[in-house]
Amino acid sequence: MKTNDLDLESLVPDERFEGERSEELLALLAERTARYTMGDSTSVRVETAARLLEGILYCLNLSKRSAGAQDPNATVKDRFFAGVREAERLKRRAALLYAQAKRFEPPVVNLGYTETCLALSGFFRQYDPAFFAQEIPCAIDYPLCQPVSERLKGVEYLLDYLKRWLVESSFLRMMDADSLRRLYAGYYADDPDLLVNLYLPAAEAASLCALAGRPVRQLTLRPADRERIVRLIDAEDASSAKTALCEAAEHAGKELNQTGEFSLDYLKRTALDLLTRLQVNRSGKVDKAT
Image 1 (cartoon, helix red, strand yellow):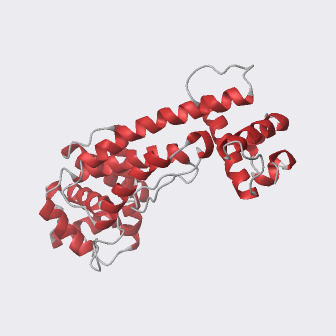
Image 2 (cartoon, rainbow, N blue to C red; image 1 turned 180 degrees about the vertical axis):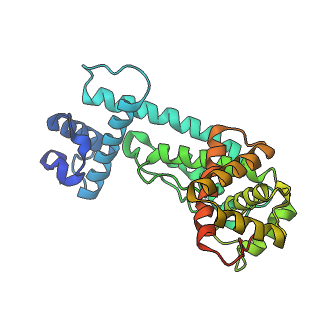
Image 3 (tube, one colour; image 1 turned 90 degrees about the vertical axis):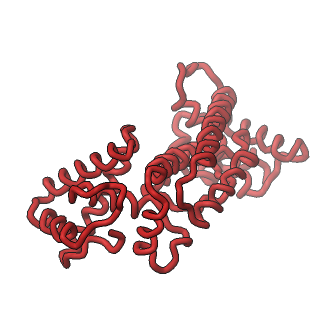
C-alpha cells in the first residue's frame, strides 16, 4: 500500500497527532518509507507503515521534550531529525549504564539475570532511531523489583530499566554472597535460578532487620524478632506503620551506603509493598525469607 494513500489515524490512533499537519506527516512517512526500502518503493505493508509512523511520532515527541529551545518555525522533518539525534544521545548514555551493569554484578546472580545482561547488548547493535525509535530490539526478561512504566518506549525504556537495574545491583553488592544464597533458598524454594528478582528478598529482609534492630547485613530474624514486628504492625495505625517501615528502610539503605535519593526511594517503595502483606498476614510468621 502506498503511504500517500494511508489514513494516519487508522495506522496509529493517538493524541500525538494534535498540532501536526497531516500532509507534512504523510510526506515524511513517504520519505522514511523510501529510505527504509532503499529507494525501491514507497509502498509497504500496513503493519510496516504503522511502525514507521510510530517511530516518527516518537521522535517528534522526544524532540518536544528534549532540552533546548524549540524553533516555532521548524518543519516536521526538522523536528523529527532533532528527535533522532536526541534518541542517539540517550542511546550513548544507556551504553554507559550498560557498561557499568556488566562491570558491577552482584555477588550472586541467576540464569535469568545473566541471560538478560547478555541480551541487552543486542539493543546497541540493532536500535535504529531513524526508523523505529519506539522499539526495543532485544529480549528483556529479568524482572525488576519496581518495574519500568509501560508508558516508556524505545531507548527511554531501556534507560530507566538500566537505572533501576544498577540501583538493585548496587544494593546487592553490599551483601555477603553466602547470606544471599541462604536467603534465596528460603524465599525461592522451588528454584532460585528461574526468572525471579534478586533485590526483592534482600531489600525486604534488610528493612525488617532494621525495624527489629538487628544487623542489616545478616538478613535473618530470630523468632522473637518476627513476633515483635508483627505486634508492632498490629499495634500501629496504617500511617504510623508506614512511617515506621519507611524509617527502617532508610536506616537499612544508609547502613548499606545507598544514600542516593532514587536508591532510598526505591528501597522505601519496596518496604511499603511488603507492609501490605504484613498487615494481611497476622499469623506471626513475618516472611519465609527471614
